[in-house]
Length: 436
Image (tube, rainbow, N blue to C red; front, top):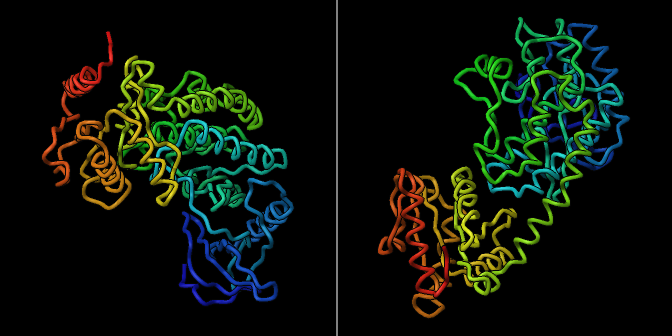
């Protein structure tokens, strides 16, 4: 597509590019008559040469503009100018759910809350005859207040209507999130295809990865069609059965075996939310002081967001030890006064801090460096030996200088967890904590 920065399309002056998809580009634009910024989704000019496509686009854009749902990014206008078809949408300063996955671990309840919001948006759209066909984390926007919006609506269905649902025999969509029927280029896809895609999103939120990956998009497509789903709990043992059951149903190969509607998936997730929230609330209320009174070792896990899979595994292992009470920041706390206070409190009330290290966490500025500094500063404030710090290597890497003099444990060999437990048991014995 041509460079459109500075160009005027209809009432909209294009300011900057903010996104790019396989078949469209998204720009920040200014609408002078209403003195506001908008998001402009622009389609390539060759699509306007097909009158049938333009008619379908206009019909669906008009329908999308009528949508009123709190979790659907509003469409204000649509049009054609200089050979470009465009949709005009609400502009928000946002991050995407993909950004959230990369940055920090999400709690199970927060992950399910985002999926409930998106499922509600999909249910609303499906009832009105629109199938999204590109549900994925990068199309789910989160504004500064934490509100969730499903964006990029409708155009995938327009594209799929083009050329009998495919381009040159290739299915349209994002392979990592496409249903088996969408992957195989089937016609007349319904809302159950979106439910499968949303199931992939939930799978990724709770495990840190998509279930199927390969070197080529075509290989990923074949895996969706042919391969058995890797169980989420095999990747993250902390996933409760109630969450895994919902994922397995949403990701059934046969559409008839999935939830019939996105509303059904919303209801299933909503039913388990109270128990997830209660479990997380109980964990927060169990301070390190209470843990000591219960004869348990308080352990704070200091980690980098890049190591979320290893951290979830370690956290799940530690939770199974009756004499250990682990604490892990899964609340997306942002750096600042509240973040500092929360981390300081967690360290101060702990008996032990495990600093989890990897090549990425020690080579880049980020949360782990700040947490290491806070942990060491708090340890320095207290009597010597009050807080025990264990640098734990998740993979071969250098150790930050402030930790180099301390004992450290490798976690990338077969005996790592056993040796870590020995260190923790020695610490517990020094504190008079009893365990079996």
